[in-house]
Image (cartoon, rainbow, N blue to C red; front, top):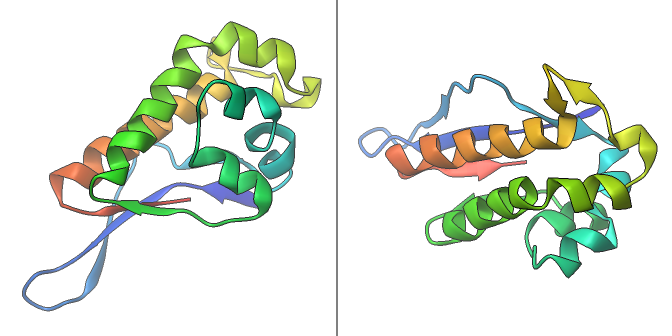
Length: 124
């Protein structure tokens, strides 16, 4: 089983829940909850929301909390070298010339951007 990003919103007229397509919705395997998102280095860097995945939480982030989610994705990208040194080796893979962790953070930034355009929710 894998962790996936999704973005959705509720249509103002019909109330219907609608999905927003993402270029990539990959955010890790189920084992990544603990082996990546639950690693102490992320909390040490100041991440608050993403480490909750390590506790088994499902995240549904909207409104002002999208700012925190964007900050966390950027903190990952800014500190990628330190993170890769401190996480288990099975989480350090290359994907298209960059680490898979960088790919996850880039995917998250896209999700946040798209959620803002529709006043939506990022779900992991």
